[in-house]
Image 1 (cartoon, helix red, strand yellow):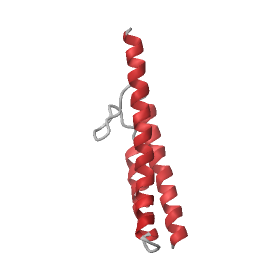
Image 2: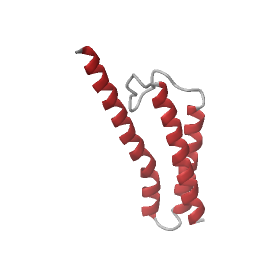
Image 3: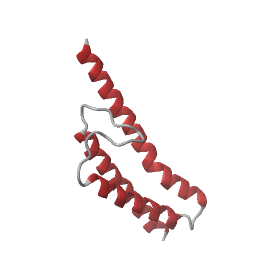
Length: 102
């Protein structure tokens, strides 16, 4: 079950980040808020995020049998990477906006 849990979590993180990539491409010139709704939301991205989040939760539940520290690592792996990607995207957009104003 542990290996299946890791596999489910990795697939879930990949699907979740695919949806995030779709959203970032759709909002290439606008900032994407951390807790709010982006200006443009691709059709399939919400469904992909839901499936990805479900697989991450399933993976976390299955690896929890081996110990609580695995659960924390699985649950944090996806959101921390997504947070970094959002920060980088928003910085790039801010930099481009400031360059066009000059």
